[in-house]
Length: 109
Image 1 (tube, rainbow, N blue to C red):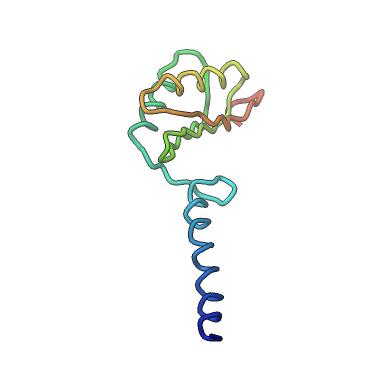
Image 2 (tube, one colour):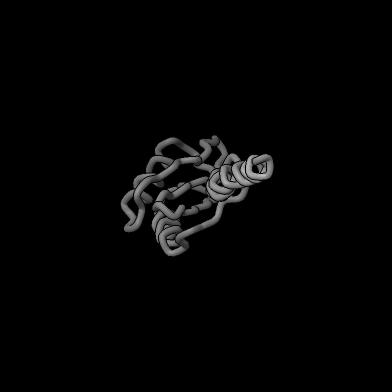
């Protein structure tokens, strides 16, 4: 009986921790994200950088497995950041957009 309880005490924490370690891969609070769909990310990046108006610098685009696109970088205005979000949303394969673009008076620094 003691052996069974001990084995449960060792197994249960491992089983509970496994889903947490998987979910941390896509969570920015836990470090590096993985681009799960580079083709969608590249399509979004191409749309945003093709704009003739000054837009987002240091642009980073990552796509999660569920089609959520994470945009980051610097924009000179809120309008430029919002335009990048609109372009991302209009891209095939994008289900959600997380806007992490920083508005800065100097988009290059």
